[in-house]
Amino acid sequence: MTDFALYIHVPFCVRKCAYCDFVSYPNRERQWRAYFQALEEEMRAWRDKMQGRPCASVFFGGGTPSLMPAELLTGALSCAATCFSLRTDAEITLEANPGTVDAEKLRCLRRAGFNRISFGVQAMDDGLLRKLGRVHTAAEVVRAVADARKAGFDNLNLDVMYALPEQTPEMWRETLERVLAFHPEHVSAYSLILEEGTQMAAMASQGKIRLPGEEEVLAMQRAAGEMLAAAGRIRYEISNYALPGRECRHNLTYWYRGEYLGIGCAAHSLMDETRFHNAENLEEYLSGGRRLDVEQLDAAARAEELILLSTRTVKGLSLEQFRRETGEELTKYAPCAWDFVRTGFATMEDGRFALTPKGMEVQNAIVTQMVR
Image 1: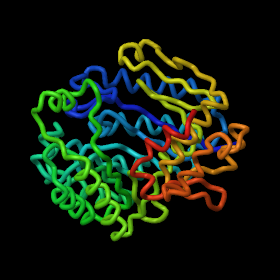
Image 2: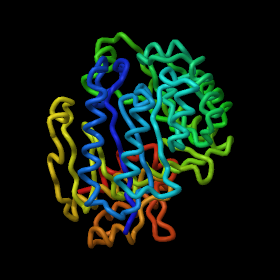
Image 3: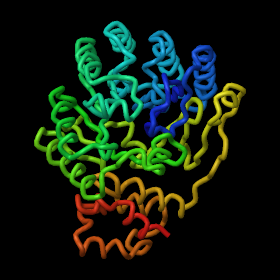
């Protein structure tokens, strides 16, 4: 049986960040325990169907999962271990805000089986953190990382963001330098995307904040690649860098269209070439909103997903996988693939179509031309 990945969504947070459009709910403490009971009930409902299938990774995302009491998180992980066949080497990640953990909570989580922490650092500048609406400070990042190491976490990801309001390339390089001083096994470096309906998008449209220009943003993206590579963190996806062997196995499942089961409010799944998701509204989820908008993917949908997702990775798209899942050759489906190779935006080697660093800078535009 093939492996699958398990995603568990925890939608609660202290407050909404100015750029956030994820499904998350601040000030809902009274619903925490009922929600975790619902998570465990949902996992038990899947137990028989998933019997014997190896689970290679578990990812608690949010929201801010680390805001939860340790007992709720460890109870959910214990339920997952009971309901599913977790591999002995399963990667078990918790997303965490540095301002919501302490030494004792981290020790408890590590003892319970969590073996990877993903800290949402975003910036090492308190002014930028305030603009983003984050609830932590740079000093709390320093403390949280030290506490995680003492607790025994030897697989640490730090999320950082560039193209922030008023941020300069020099400020971005300083954030990267400070982050690398923590010696993280993994770094995710994302560009700020203004999503419609967020506080930050409204501020930008009203001229209340200044965002870096295209040239500055490109300089920041290139600085990330250069500095992280020099520190031995190898780029393996557009926004992700890791020491060899420390790539995020859970996210690789998404990018290579592996199967994953989403548990919780707004969680999405891909199982047996079928996509579905749970209710996004918290109350609707608690009332039983499961497995909505079921879509059986046809060859056209699979082709589009393979191109969109696999070209985000440095290894790129397997031509054999494309042929197997769509019944068509990539170069027949998208003849323009050869144009991108000729112009240096991609390579076609060893049975894979992959974007070059130059191509990754315009991945969205390339995908738009390749998909029908």
